[in-house]
Image (cartoon, rainbow, N blue to C red; front, side):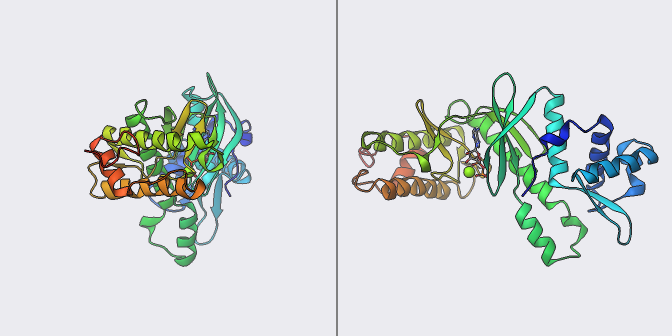
Length: 304
Ligand SMILES: Nc1ncnc2c1ncn2[C@@H]1O[C@H](COP(=O)(O)OP(=O)(O)O)[C@@H](O)[C@H]1O
Ligand SMILES: [Mg+2]
């Protein structure tokens, strides 16, 4: 698991970040950045580089290798530190708080700003990356930054989707993004998977979710990872989060993915609240209405 770098941040000096971003620069060209190249990349003296390499390696922000040549690369913690530093410099955030959710694909923390916000570090490619590296120890240099690249792309995609659909769709307000991290509104509520809906709420909540999916489609996106784990329920309604897999509606598979999303959500309600979503229309019919902007209620699906 990736460690929380927030407590380390207070120890770090401006020049440490220069060194880390020097290593980041160097990693565009090779997996391991040779020590001799770091004064150039980081604009520090060779002496300062030596001093700061030890400081950053001791704190787990850099990994060192000594076989063939002495080289360094960023760890995920080092990459986190760079993103966090950028958010602080931009005044996006002023303090770091408790974990909100630690997943396979992300680590989400509360952060302080003018109000509490959520910071999501993307981890896509991390577990894969380690497997790939284990299998192919001498991997071609081209693939060396795969985890960084994959996680950064995922963050960009999520931020773009949020920016497009907010505020028409009920999603966390996007605030800022940098590297593999995004800052967004913090949502209070319970995950749909943990919510215990009253019988009278079951169909209205399901319809609310489908209605948001319809609006998202009209705004140009299919979520493509809809499940009971990516929806919050609270007193104001529902919020759909976790958008890195979202695809534009002009994507070749968009309608197929929309139907799969509908199936996931409707299937969950049918399993969790048996008999309460009576005569559920076919997912394909619901998806078709969502895409056409004609969905109103489950009962009216299929009425022309
Ligand atoms: N904006 C947010 N506000 C509050 N908690 C959040 C927010 N975004 C994510 N979380 C929490 O973090 C967890 C993981 O976030 P999610 O976006 O679903 O990423 P993953 O790809 O790891 O599933 C969520 O299940 C949720 O509990
Ligand atoms: Mg999720």
